[in-house]
Amino acid sequence: MSRSSREALSSRVAAVGTPAAKALAAFVAKKAANGAVACWGAIADEVKKSLNDDASIEALWKTMVTDGDPRPQLVLLSILKDRPKLVAMAQADQASVGPVVRQALQAIGDPNDAEANRGFQARINELLAVKYFVPDSVEPKKESQRRSK
Image (tube, rainbow, N blue to C red; front, side):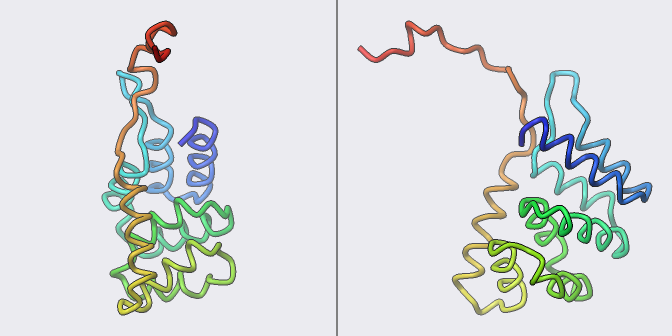
């Protein structure tokens, strides 16, 4: 996630206005002492930890649907997939989300749809695989060492 994406996500989450959403926004924007920043895996863990009530997750979902970025929508779907009331709320927004998120909603709604479930699980695994990223933590190789001989 780029810096501008991170800042935009933090702003959108903070706009939800609840104390839990503001804390999540601060987490998204925060840098550790070593420069590490949260990626989707750590953000998902923080959402699970700090947004426990349905109303907070529903408000966050509505904000992410309005924004249109499928990545936070998929992260939220991975969290709410076992909560029937929230699944029904998300499925009501099918016309407002992109095809990747519609496929995820299909997977959540029909556990027997192997193709939709495989696609959803693959995307979630990819998104959540990285928890933190430390920019500039690796010294770039000297150009002369990078050229093939």
